[in-house]
Length: 271
Ligand code: KIV
Image 1 (cartoon, rainbow, N blue to C red):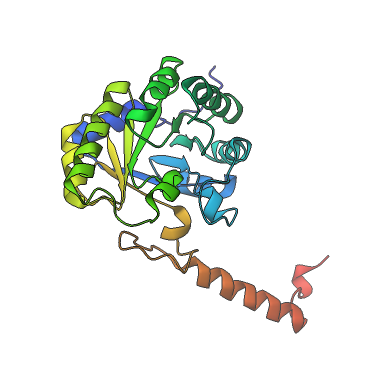
Image 2: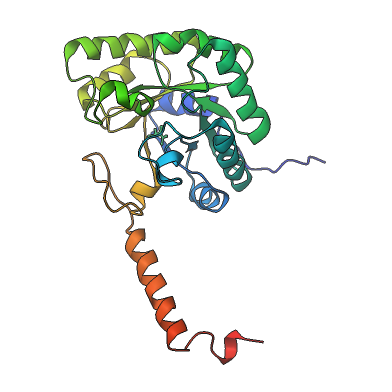
């Protein structure tokens, strides 16, 4: 008798065959057990435990402050919540840029302590050696090019990347380097749609875009943004599928009113 459930899990191979069949890949971020369970039940293909947790969970202005221990905590919670989707975890700023040994140790900690299925890291050629070392230890790696938020102080702005030819050519080269290094997929963030389409056509691994247009192999959004929990973040690429800020605020107001006017709890809601 198997101790494992019958549910067919999404793997890195599933994503590759989805690209080959022209089936788009759906990916969202998640940071906790309860939300991860809902997104998985809805049929999401990939959950990313993004270092955007630094913004949407912890309230920091950038992704830089979040630590490896904090990422592992979020990843453990997400892994416990899902049955089917692939769980990818961001290596946080400062946990891999030093050298490939540091990168490998960080990746191993995430895999061993959280039970996640893959890691993601930002950068091109400069992280190629680290990617190869992590993959040679058996850990699948997702790349991330374009707007890479861990480098925000180098860019100085969150505006669209690779609009100029030189940066676009560099991005195309880096995408091939990441593919050759063995990445199973690549995130492209906030670049012209035509460039996203070109990269996705140029490489065999799935390309998942956020603000990279519709010509890539899949889409990712930050859960808080697409559910409308964040009211003040409205980039052009964002489509909101709910207005949870208002739903939660209205529910909270109704609860406060019921408590104040002694309507809650009623006869049936007590022992
Ligand atoms: O951390 C994150 O949420 C991400 C996505 C924007 C791709 O890296």
